[in-house]
Every structure is written in C-alpha cells, then in structure tokens.
Length: 158
Picture 1: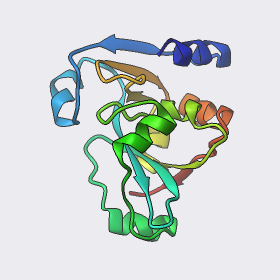
Picture 2: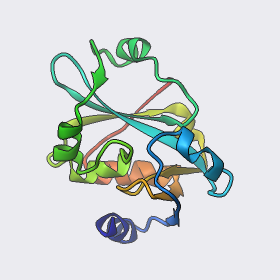
Picture 3: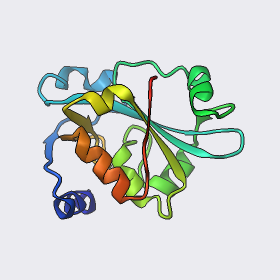
C-alpha cells in the first residue's frame, strides 16, 4: 500500500484514505459510502476463453452483464479469473481488487475498461490494495495513474 501512495506522491496525485472494517462486497461497504466522498466503484478481474485478461471498473451500483460486455469489448466467454491468478499478477485477493493494482502488472498484460460514469465523476474511490481502507482520488488522476503504469484505459458504457 505504501508503494501506491509513494507513486501517487511522485505523480503529483492528491489522495485521501479512510480506514474502515474490511469490505468483501459492495453491500458490506454501503453504510460507509456517505462518509467517504467520491463515486464508489467496484473492479472486476476477468478473463476470456483465450485467456486474455481484463480489468473492468464500474460504479458500485451498476450491474455487470458479462454477455453485453463481451459484445462491447469484442471478447468471448468472459468469466471471473481465479483468485490464484489475481494474486500472482495483481498481488491482491478477492474483495480487494482495485485498478491501482495494475502497477504490479508489468509488463502490461491486462486490458483496462472504465465505465463512462467513472470518467465523468469528479472523484472516485477504490481500495488501496486492501479492503479495510478506501482511497479517493480525482478521476483524471486515475487515468494519469493508469497511463503511467502502461495501461491505456478504454472508456465504455456498461
């Protein structure tokens, strides 16, 4: 987590982090959303039938229709990647998946897709590699961060 904050500081990205009980699901964190400013988001680590990897980032309350997303991104048979793959590539466990973890995907292998709502938001919130904290940054800084890590995000309507 400190590596992430150091990188934010190096890139000039303002960030605030709140501590809270561990959230394993969006539902777990509902009562905290009003206490932490910004658009609360969820991140899905997916793979397709050809083992291509994807990170899909969308607002916490938006449903991810994998069939529709497959058509949008030109993929087939999307499914959730196994926890072992998540840990080996992004160094996080289920319940802590975050777009910030792409800093460990080097060289970049994961395609990152952001729902258009995220780009339109002033501030966005994600776990900073662990699910007992939430970090808020500007959405423009999320894109700056992703590009710095070699992940050019595609913006889609989920």
